[in-house]
Length: 232
Image (cartoon, rainbow, N blue to C red; front, side, top):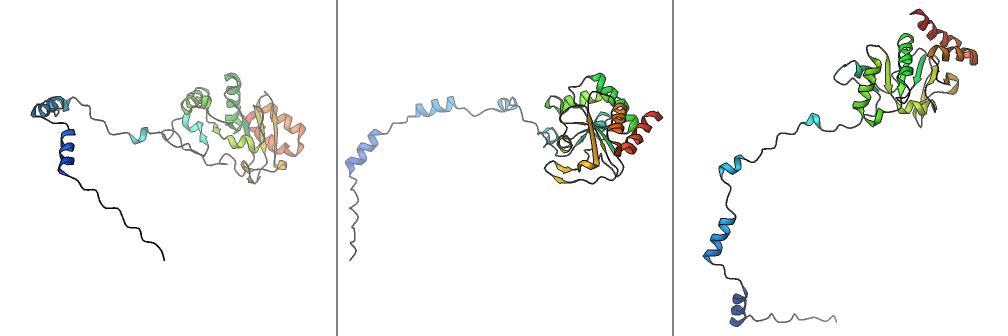
């Protein structure tokens, strides 16, 4: 049979134990109470009036999450809708042929200005991999100085650099009319027979002329943009 354990008897507290406990406690006198009250006085109305009241936090000034979509710096530079309305991915590519010029703020202002002039005339879109100095404010300031009053597409799209395997700037990508993207690691990709690219520190018209000579299947698309350049 299981054994049953009997709990030990409770200790007996005597009057002598109570007396010893009372003697060990510190004696608080009226003087101690008055001294404590003097040291820890309640603040007066005058004291409270000197304490600054925290203002209501501005929700619009709090850090905002980074948008996964491209930022249209052209709209930012022109001051549309406060900071510009971000464009959804792929919006720079329509049903017609597209000309993309991949650039960087590390390029000289003279080169960027020349490409912006030709992009405005031809309808090409300039693309950046990221912000200048990892700062949106610095990027906006730099782009405003470069774009000025030009009506030109100027976007940030790091995925596009991977999508078209861009390794140097400037790189010019000419996309065929009706090209359809497909899902890939970079988001969406185009088959190699739907676009052609050329890299080098050259003008847009020079790049298009080179494409006509080196990739005859893109001659019609190249001529479309060359005609716009020569028309103005």
